[in-house]
Amino acid sequence: MLLAIDAGNTNIVFAIHEGLELRHKWRISSSSSRTADEYMVWLTQLMLLENISPKKITGAIIATVVPQALFPLQLLCRRYFDCTALVVGEDGVDLGLEIKLDNPKEVGADRLVNAVAAHKKYGGPMIVIDFGTATTFDVIDNDGAYCGGIISPGVNLSVEALHMAAAKLPRVAVEKPAKIIGTGTVSAMQSGIFWGYVGLVEGLVRRIKHEFLQQHPDQIMRVLATGGLAPLFNDEIDEIEIVDQELTTYGLFEIYSRNI
Image (cartoon, one colour):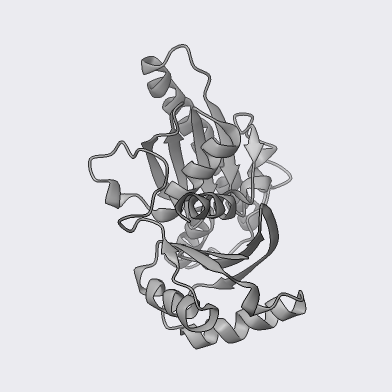
């Protein structure tokens, strides 16, 4: 069995793969102070609830955008699962894609993992939108090369910033309001957040396609969305053709398979 770990700014996802099958997936809030021992106590309890013995783990892979989380996660794999984890982005780890950037090291590991998974499952060219802590747009060409992208503030981050910066504005849930024109503070904020991001995504996708297809006029570019809020926005954004909530864990499995 493979333990795949996706360490983001908000949550860390632990997924168990058995062959091609995703057996189980759990998440815990990200914390720079959490130790390998704490991860193990939490994770083994969840594994045992699903009748998965820690001794069945034979390999591990980690993708992280939080540098301080890497050491305790590597220690977790060595100490408790008796394996050395592959780390996405480290020298010698074959991703199977070309990174067409001036400085490939700048690209977040999660974005590269998503690019690998998107091209493997759906082909290209492709725009991958990840509704995470940041809302990212990543461009993969027909050959699977990573061409770059866009980073914008995440939906929940924007909600929190609005609440923190304006004394009279409450913290609101991210949801589609009944009407576009709000008739109260909460509905007005919800409309601004929800429809504002719909407009942001539609506008950026249109501009990305225009720029990319100027150089590749004979190709059709598809759009895929992932991340926790992807289903919420999917119904209102016609440009989104695919929603895949397991994209990152699939990408980690694919990268691991290339390197064993």
